[in-house]
Length: 330
Image (cartoon, rainbow, N blue to C red; front, side):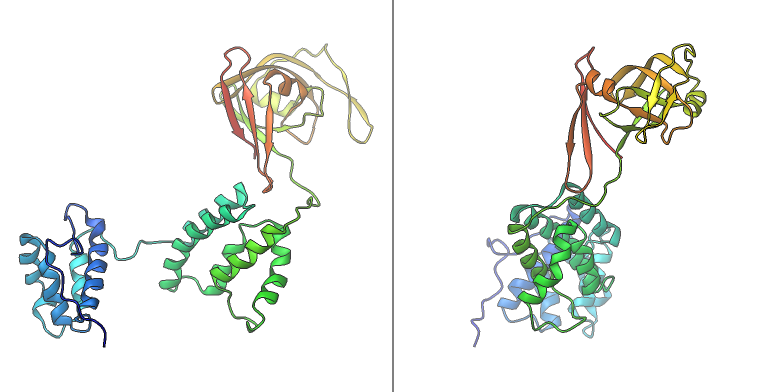
């Protein structure tokens, strides 16, 4: 027979406690009481549970809770009483609300920064599990759907080998049966310890957003280009003046040579608190609005950091003020 322990006295260390100023802690107070109630052998008695919780309530709460219909009615259960109490304290939900958007935010956060070792995997697993558990408990997502979200945070080099690893590790799984998050974590942890990263077939060209004349302009970055270039359409839209007598030949990747339309002198490009004053060559109908080439890299002492996810950050310095900012590429 289990060892029955009496409910702790109100002033004992193990007694459930709740300060009514902190509404969000009320569910925790109920959980603490249910723990000591189970040890005292009264968890299966709705009447004893409702009376027992009053031992730990302050006088005002005690008087109010006694007036509730679910307390007075002996046919009402402990769960019904608890639900009614919670309804009188806005902000004290039993379970924190979670949405699939919350889950996507966790996945996207780690997909961007990358998960490359057991420590990073553990951090991701904990954050993901908190949200996923709530969604499953409320039947918002199935186990299969949760597993599908979980693996999206990992690069292709991990995902393409994951099915094989799962089949080896858990051969008794039937087709269509969802893998638990713990099983997924174990398999991925193994793959991370033996992971070999390979280059993708292609990656998108990155760019940054500059403010020119109070208007945002998308600029692609190419340190292999020897000039700063702007399409004539963008030049006209921004009202940038240029000298049409200063033209230079511009050779494209296919070897074709065209002439620029002129040069705009001392055009200010603002990136947050850093302003770069650039000499911009105007080009007819390129595939970009603005191309930031080698002159921008040199002037701003640009340092590029790329991530396995494909994201990229560029740290630039204002040569006149020495102000430094880091700008994400898009």
